[in-house]
Image (cartoon, rainbow, N blue to C red; front, side, top):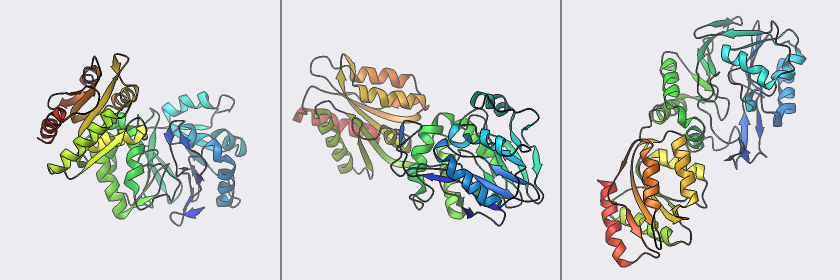
Length: 388
């Protein structure tokens, strides 16, 4: 437990032992579930925690309350990693009111069917306020960032934005605190990447507020230069802009032949003056980091083997994820390999055609087995096309 301001306390929890967040995202540095308490004439709990850390969260809450009774539980987001404690809070504090969006009110029984919500929910809408005394919370609706019931709240007393999942990152509270962008980027594109327009809408609303600190539901509290940089990056990410100049090469190779050619292409690009070339093995590297890099760079090369008359599964999985996250506004070059009937290039093109504003650059380079001297000229031409 620590103080955010004189009257806002952090009561969240670290989960250093979890290894898969949402049962799919690798989190080697664990995860934090942020929750806050505002102590004023009225007392407000700002979200709860995940069931994995519920006992620790209740202890943190009790210590921070120091005998006081909470008046409100503010629910910004109903996802279980933030809201697992709603039922217990309702049971512990019979007079407490739950403040949430109307959509959240309708959804709460889906997660807490046995909780009696009669006369205990205050459903708020865009611009509604709640006075705690000195602190006045203004509620801002943020549907589809990244669930439909999401809202954020602004505290005008301390100029704090409680941003729900916005501006979150993977890792425990203090993990890589000086390098916020790396795990925040992977978090954003894999969890919120599909919802660029809703995030952009929220950023426009936030721009009208005098915000000194951002308090997300995951990751460190942001202020000063770190907050300014986070806002800059979110503006790029939500508009599907290019964050960094360079080329990302993703290869999916069955026996290593396609990998050798992809690495040769990386060498050619560097020799031609490309300052940054990032290479990933889609078969072995974290696929969600591949999604992150595909969004980070404006130029991407996809190199894959043919398999069962179609596309090698790891590359198919990557393109499927990119399609689900509405990957767009990118230039792509393709390389395929096939011993008798190369089909990977055709399959990749078909998947890319279903995405928005994807430009295929150059001719598809077709390998047959191992890379040969005659293939290097084709790789040179592909490098020229992707750098043009």
